[in-house]
Structure formats: C-alpha cells, structure tokens
Length: 392
Image 1 (cartoon, rainbow, N blue to C red):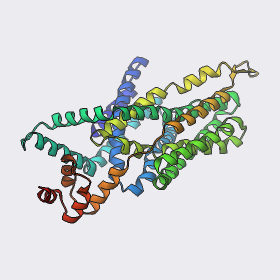
Image 2 (image 1 turned 135 degrees about the horizontal axis):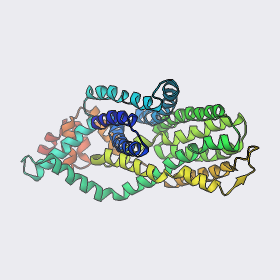
Image 3 (image 1 turned 90 degrees about the vertical axis):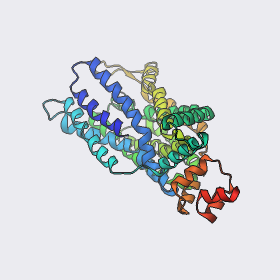
C-alpha cells in the first residue's frame, strides 16, 4: 500500500512535467498500474477487521469515496486550473500532496488481524511441511497462492464477469450523460454540471444506505432490490426534461451507488483469504477494463438514431434512447449474476476473537484443518494447543 502511494507522488509530479501526449500517456499508464495495485490492500485494510454489523455501511462509505473524489476533483479543478499560471499542470502537482499524508497515517497503524491470522496460518503450514524447519516465506506464499487459484479459478472468473456488469452500469449511466444533457436537451454547461453533481450526491447517499441495509437483508438481496429499482427509474432518467431531470438523476444514481455499496465487503468476503487483496483488486480492474468502452459503444450506436440538427447546423443524436436501452440491459445482467456471499468464516473469526483466542492460535487452527468441533473446544479450553493435546 505504501509502495503504491509512493509511486503516486512521483507519477503525479511527473504528469505535470510532461511535454507531449506520448509522455503523458506513458506516465498515466504507470499511474494506472499503481492505482490498481492500491485498491486491494486499501479495501482489505479498511474493511476486513470491522465487526460484521458495521461492514455494510462502511463498505458503502468506502466505495462512495469515488464519488467524493469526483466532487473534490471538480472543486480543485475550478480552484487551480483557471487561476494559476501553469493551468492543468498545477492540478497534478497538487495531487502529489495527499498521498504523503496517507502514507504517514498508514505508517502509524498496525497490520490487520486478518493479515496476522493469514501469516500465522502460512507459518504453521510451513512448519508442518518441513518438520518445524523454517522455510522461505515467499515460497510458502506462492505455494498457497497457487493452490488457492487452482481451487478458486471459477470464482475469480465469476468476480470478473460480475465486476464487468457493475462497472458498466456506472460508465453506462454517467459517462455519456452530460453529452446527452447538452447535445440532445440543450442544457447549458452549468445546468449539466448541476444535474451531474446532484447525481453524484445521490450515489454517495445510496452507497451508504444500501450498504447499511445489506447487513440485515444480506448482500445479494440488497443488491437485487437496488437493481430492480434502478431499472425502474431508467425511463424518467432519460425521458424527463428540464429541471425534472434533477430528481430523476438523483434517484437513478442513488441506486447505481446503492448497488455498489456492498461490493467492497462482498468481494472481500468472496475472495480466498490468502489472495484476498490480489483477487479483489485484479477482478475489479479487469471488470473495469471490460466495461471501459461503454460510453464509446453508446455514442457509436447513438449515431444510428439522428435527430434534427440545431439552428447552427450541429448534428444531434438520440443518446437518451441508447442510454435507456444500455442501462436497462446492464441492470438485468447484474440481477442475473449476483449471488450469495460466504460470510461464515467472517462470523467465525469474530466469535473466536470475542472468546479471547489469539491470532496465532486461530491461524494455526486453520492450518491444521481442525474440524467443526474446533470452535466448541476453543470455548472450553481457550487455545489450539490444548485442543491438540486433548485430541491426541
């Protein structure tokens, strides 16, 4: 996590010094790698040690940091780009500052309990295989990672397919929408900005609300309800006119953000423990890659539905029709693919911690594949070593 944040600092500074498009694209490509590398560790650090009852709402809060960042970026753009002599370069140089603060904050925090349990489990397995002789931690990790990927490759494919749908609903309802407002409906840039900002506020509210509700209803049911309601709001999102669209944008994006709300903790709970950050981050980014052409697809299809040109002769297209069809199809896609998460291990871990079982003992217990009586015996005896003595 700190390595990625450090890369952010240098790449943000470098972006501001680029002299041509090729240089800029090269630096931003490297920035994208660092950004993708940060997501998994950040989600794990933020969520995996939370009590189960708090995971839903804080998952929504974590995910909607995207929306908050979107709004902050607009604010800093207005504050720096038009008012400084270096224009857009100033925005990138400013962006090198926040990672420094995050690095200092992360350095002051310990590793998460789940990381310590996984480390203990890995060390216990290594000790078993080498008869208590210390082996290479990297070799042990790679062996576990290889085994986890072989056993969970279908799960990984499922997560990528699911993330393609989730990213498509975001891109599909947001990227081309300002163009739809300005080109087809004749909104001014200010009006279009107001609608967009209100939509982002709806997404932030929806993420926290649905994330919180998912604690009681289950992740799957909460996301399915958000899909149904989001799909029902697609017609007003593209058919209403004038200021009526503001309310439609708020509620449509409320459910777009809402269906995303449980996703961080949902993916963490689905991912194999030994590869949770890798699987989370890679599945999210591959899904994002698969959906990156959403706005291009919509714009290309929209050109097949021309409208009367403006008085100035500017071509217009029925983007609203394409937005509606695309969003409706993606809502149905997500509804079809979302499934129940596995939260049993999360709850078991919390219960064992509440009973005072140490992280080392929990990790060692997992490594030795102690049966279902493990939990009951731990409650009676207090730690794994006593269990082993009793079972032997």
